[in-house]
Image 1 (cartoon, one colour):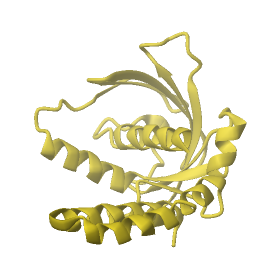
Image 2 (cartoon, one colour):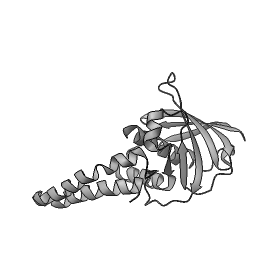
Image 3 (cartoon, one colour):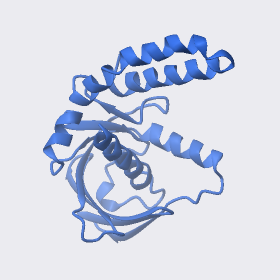
Image 4 (cartoon, helix red, strand yellow):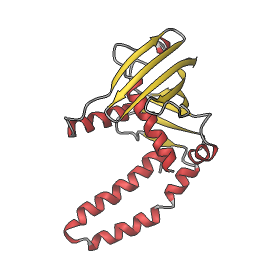
Amino acid sequence: MNAALTIGILAASFCTNAFAAGPQVPKVMSDAPPTAGAWRMEMPGMDKAAAARIGGSMTVCQTAAEAMVRDDRKQDKSKPACNMKLTEDTATKAVMEMRCPDQASRMTITRVAPRSYEMEMQNLAKPSDAPMRMKMTYTGPCSKSDSVISMDKDSPACKQMRTQLPQIEKARASCAKAGANRASCEQMVAQQRAQIASMCGP
């Protein structure tokens, strides 16, 4: 489960930065929708066990990811934003470098079908590591109130998360004994349930 979430967060970061590159949208992505939306992410080179846990693919809501990044920057105005630079820009391939305070990546993008792209992400701090490969396909609009990452509700990852619901309900019952901290306790429990519902459905 941790691997699935980690990969999903990387994809959300990628969508937020690469697909929102402002006026310098890569030529290879000229058919991408002009506004943020939802993208199905598939990783054919992903470890089979990790792929099985997420059901083979997950969906990233770029709209929600952008809203999350904006809120994060409002809370920490001193946090520098990531810088994106196009180093190659043709109708068949784009190469982009993304440099953030805590990471630097190079992304190569090729178009495989309308609104569908194959991407390769290389960690510049570890050039000897194998790059992460993925395929992103636009699936339609989404809302900033949607989950940044969602998976097939019948995937092993979602089934595993649902096994946590009884423990969450026990935690809710214990909130009555939390005294002055009861409100924050109930809020935390509600957030845990909401996270599972948003990622895996009711």
